[in-house]
Length: 93
Image (cartoon, rainbow, N blue to C red; front, side):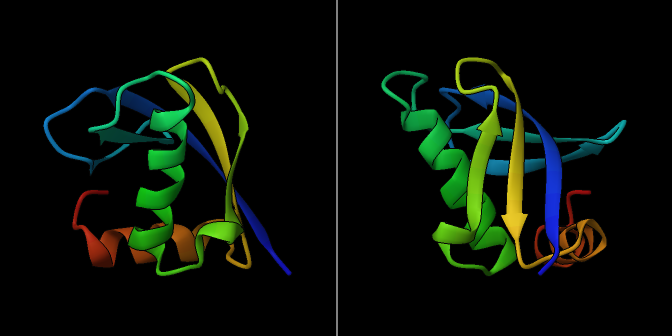
């Protein structure tokens, strides 16, 4: 089963959670949740799972729990498939 690794930059505390776009190989997200007690990290996983149409259990944060720059893995999808789904769903990247 393929596993995609995504570099993500997060802006927590935004008005709404959304995918901003892809720039220089980094997926940019705005997250409504505050960066306390892992709430923003959980919101990142939930937003990506919904955008990619995969179960939340297949999206996990693997690096950067206390940083704006994170690495997220998505089980069952290749990086190409992730980018394809993001561009079709949100129009952002």
